[in-house]
Image 1: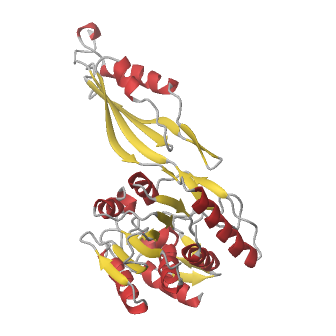
Image 2: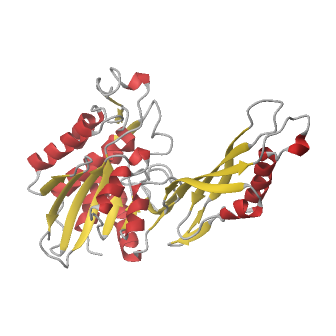
Image 3: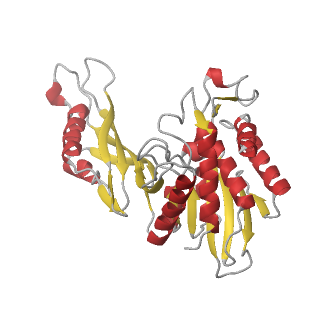
Length: 372
């Protein structure tokens, strides 16, 4: 456990919100020093390692996956400006405090240690990967997938702790995606004292909003777990001054998508003249369709919890998009299981429990060695 905590502290101390290079260097150097695996680094900074049946074209590939980029730190979490100063890292009361401790350098440390120590079945290629750009839309994952990195199965080490109940690390079988859209309403300007001479874009936008309010939110069922999306107008911007009929109004829509279903947002544009629908960002949802993998991973997690005298974890649904969505879209069967607890990631008091990291390490080891 000390080795895991020490490696976590080392990685957390390395700034990686503007430039992930140094953190990726540290992961690559550790893998080369501590393993006999084939270690690779691609042009965007993703780090990979492979061992096991790497020469068998029929071998299945199981990957342990994390990311080493983080969101910008709070002032209290860094010793200097930008990537010039190290992040502040403190260990107290069994927890490691610092930007990226929970999301997700602690889990990356657990992944690489489990990769080193695991003895996979003879017909399995075991991989570990740490991506860049997860916090900005999965740029690293998408680059890796485009270059051919599509493992058969993957455990993405994002947070799943304390979802079903306090004190357990659950296994996520599905998560929501996020589609950010803009409804652009166009009209024609006129003096506000003669509104009949113009077409009010705000009114058209209001009519489109009424259509959005009547749309059904997407919903699905994965491994017996209900996944319910959502749909909400979050920003309305239109008009330039008080005495001119507005000729343009933009409506921002936040949609949480689910596997296999999306809201019919195109209807809002089709139903109202002068309105267009534009998709700004589309982070895919995730669902694991491999029941044996999902059940086997949960069995491993329950064995680990039982050995530690903890309550049993469950299959759960995660509300947040992760790199698992990109992998699922590419054909990988992914699950999410990791140390971060709700309310820890992206906060100025971010921390992770050393005992939870150890629990994750044991789960990753067990999954890497188990046949499915």
